[in-house]
Image (cartoon, rainbow, N blue to C red):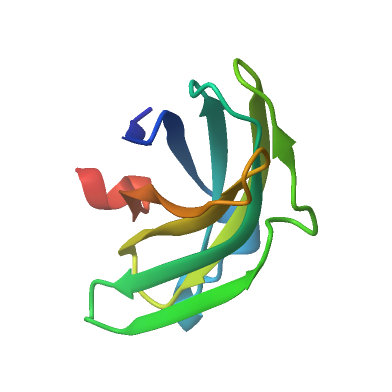
Length: 130
């Protein structure tokens, strides 16, 4: 299992991906992946995750963007030394794709907004690895 990690301003974002064969329909070029995000606050400040912005790219060079408030319906506060985890998913029309993006965070002490990089990660149907 691959884990992709990026650290920005003391905020560590790690991603693990999982192909979801029971939700996919390869005959109709529908491939579903789940990903688990772990956000660890190694900074000295309480932060709040305000927004997300994703780039989703298929191996056919298709590109779409997803933006929104928070993640999975939450705008979590993460104190120094704490971790927030969530699982979400993505559908692709190709067997291979990738995602990357940013979170907009806010430092609670001074309301300073800053972006945290979400590392680029690959989504691959396991049979394509042969």
